[in-house]
Length: 322
Image (tube, rainbow, N blue to C red; front, side, top):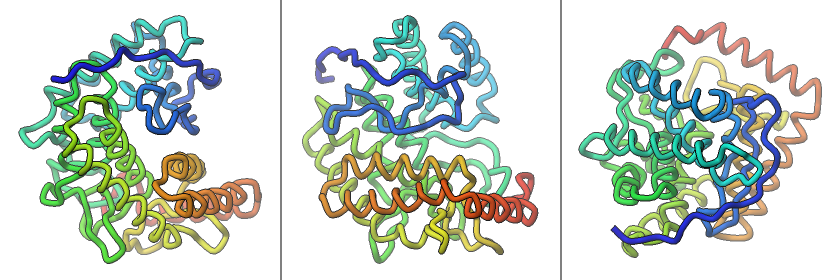
């Protein structure tokens, strides 16, 4: 395993008030330097479990209930802990580093022989997906965490295979390019936020120190193809009022994004624009993010979106699959 330089500490923005797990703005990140931070600020996710000692207790509980827990739940805790571990304003950063290491160690042994994180119960709502099923979002979060935590680069390469190999069934090839799938439903739902989480994993692997040049090149090419595809497909996610949809699954009525996911879409589009391969792509992503952000500030648009989301859940409640 190749040696890597020691992780540097960086001054980041203040921690979110009341450590809200749903506060996920753009993270502090220097393009090209994966040790500088992460694309989305997940410190609130980690902090929502309490101080590091309590977070470790929650981690133990999550692992014990593994058959009912989404891998993303554990992996976001790990990434948020890693972000706190490089935050000079956090007095507990050494303890948070231990939490991140524990999650990385768990991830290394939880993967199956193909480097996948299995979901061991059927998808409980929205889509009809029997167990076991797999998610590009989980694979990407694991990749992003494992390239940052010392001693786990080989594990990151295993986790990333699902983001590179279409035969592992987490990539949809379309006429406009590949889409990374958060959910393996049929037909494919093309969930927007899960797709962008997937792109982070490819980008981080492409910029990981010590990576095999061939693997880095594959990740870079897949990332560039994914961003080009995202830019082309984005208009299909936008309503006439400038609000986003959660997915493109053929539901009876459109699955409008909730205010949380709409805000997340805005932040994530800007993070992808920050690392877009081409300036024209960055400009397109920023323009879309700007329109969607303006929609948040219009009370009538916001109320309409919430009403449409409520209508969607009346037709397809959380306890009902597709």
